[in-house]
Each structure stands twice: as structure tokens, then as C-alpha cells.
Image 1 (cartoon, rainbow over the protein chains, first blue to last red):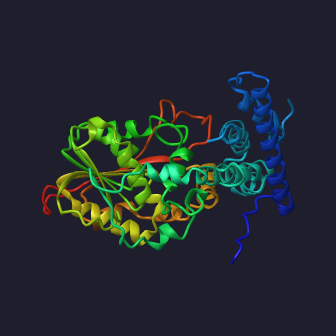
Image 2: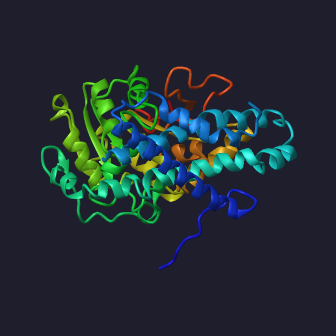
Image 3: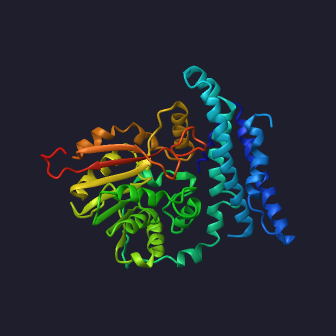
Length: 65
Length: 344
């Protein structure tokens, strides 16, 4: 079975792979947060996912706040 | 879908909105500073870090949507038996062709990064979930807007919708016109889901048929309108030429063909992102459509007039400067002459 290489976007392909690790971890954190909120009996907050994504991804813009 | 899978998909969706919004705007603003200088554009923009992040997120958020622990494919696989049991076999306006030769361009690529593509029995459910509520991703009005635009001043009694998928485009045309609509697709799964979800009011007026859009097997000159939505860019050049010829064969004299698809924008950033989307979303034939001489192809097939216009999938979609990344939606309209001697 042939395993195809994933596309590379950064000058150093190690960064491509590490981004995958970071995003997998971030997804786990978000899922766990949702689970904790459900266990606490709290309703999902509207816009929570967007706020989480903004907080997570803003550094890639490379701009000062 | 479990609460964990729903939360994961919400996370991916929110990251996609950040990618299409703030990250796109950052890239757009950076590109603006060297719009007139191709060398600077190549080094600072195409080869710069913001574009690298933009490309990475486009590729991998799509991968995350479909694959991995809570990706749509494994999540819906767990519900396979229930989902498959709900699909109709045939009849009631649904005609399948189990012996249909599926073209290699359709079977050989995981289009949209959907593992296995649309050949699997429950793949239509994955596709529908990936597409979101109504319309297409984030554009719920798209099909209705296209149908209204095409049917304005072009009444049609018989419509064939090529590459109808799980039926949203065919239903939009059936709702907008008092016409009989035939939806054609290669995917039996999509057609079965389309037939299953056809609104009761449209039963008897909409039929679904498994066939190749480039060789439908339908009677010649039996339609006033041939349409497609997001089909052309999935086909290599020879299949595109065959589809255009087939459209001419299916149309009555004076009939219209209307395709809603993607053509590369004029600006450097738009062209860069168009080519990138083709590679990153596993849609290799977008380049074939971009390079096709539409005027010559439609003329060769016997069409008299051709119009190519930008399409606004929602109000304000074409405003400048762009506030969010969007696919370069384009309407391609051509008319078959009333007689071979009548060029108009």
C-alpha cells in the first residue's frame, strides 16, 4: 500500500507537521471544555467556538493587538 | 452525532471562519501593498508566512472536518446501518444504474478530501453534513438565487440538472419554475438521499436518474434548460467538452444552458488562491476549467451566444474590498439557436 506524502506549506516541513499536533490538541481542549460545561449543567454559550478560535489563532496574523 | 463530535465540528467550523475572515483579510491587506509588483508579490505574499498559514488551514481544517477521531467519515460510519436503511432502493422517480461505468476522474480522487468520495452507500450523508444547512457551506441562499437568476425571463417546462448531488439544486429549480426537473448524478448514494428528502409537494415533478452528465442517455431535444451547479470544475477537459456537446444535444432549439461554477478572478491574489484551492481541496480539474476556451467550446457544440458573469451568492458578496474569502462564483449562460442557420 502506497502512503501519499501530505502537502507542505511552510519553508520547514517540520512546522507543517507540528501545526497538525497543535490543532489536534486545541480540538481536544475545546471538546473537553464543552464536556465540562455540560457536566456543570451550563448551556452552551453562543459564539463560544468563535471566541475560542480567535484566541487560539490570532497569533498567526503576526500583528500587535 | 455524539456531543463530542458536535463540539469538535463546531471547533473546526469556528477555525474555518477565522481562516476565511481575519486571516484572509490580513493576507488581502498584505497583498495590497505589492499589487503592482509581481516580484514582490511572489516573495512577500505567495512565499510569505501569512499565505503559508492560510494554505495550511485551508488544507487541514478540511481534513479535520472529514477525517480523524471525530471527522464526519468515522462519525457517520458508526451510524452506517441506520443511515443506509433509510435510503430508498428505486422507483417513485428514482432510477439507478448499477452497471454504470464510473469515470476514473471521479473515482480516483478523494474530492474535497472526502475519503472514498461519493461512491460509498452512505457517502451522501457525509457530503450533506459537510455542506451544512441549505445551499452550500455558509451560503444557504445560493441555489435559490441561481435558480431565480436563470429562470428570470427564461420560462422552462423541462429542466435537466446535471451533477445534482443530493438534490438541493434540482429542488431549487423545481420550486422556482412550474417545470418537470430531472436530476442527473453519478452517485447512487446522493440520488437515493435526494429522492428520500424530496419535498412532498414536488413529488411527481422531480425525477432522479443515475447517469454520466457527459452521456446521459436522455432523449435529444427534450429540455428547455440544462443546468449544473459546481459540476464543471470537477471534470477534466475531455469530459467538459463532452458535457457541452451533450447539453447541446439535450436542448430544444432556443433552449438555454446555465452553469454555476468557479473561474479564476483577475487579481493576482485571487488567482493564487484559486490555484491553491484546487490543490488543497483535491479538486485537480479546476485548472482544466480555468484553461478551457469557453467561447470556442460552446461555439463548436453549436451554441450561439455565451455570457460569463460574476455571481453573488448573497447580498454584498461582490463588494470591494472583499471582507471574507469566497469561491469565485461565476454564471456561464449559453443559448442554442432556433435553427442551425440562426446565429442569434
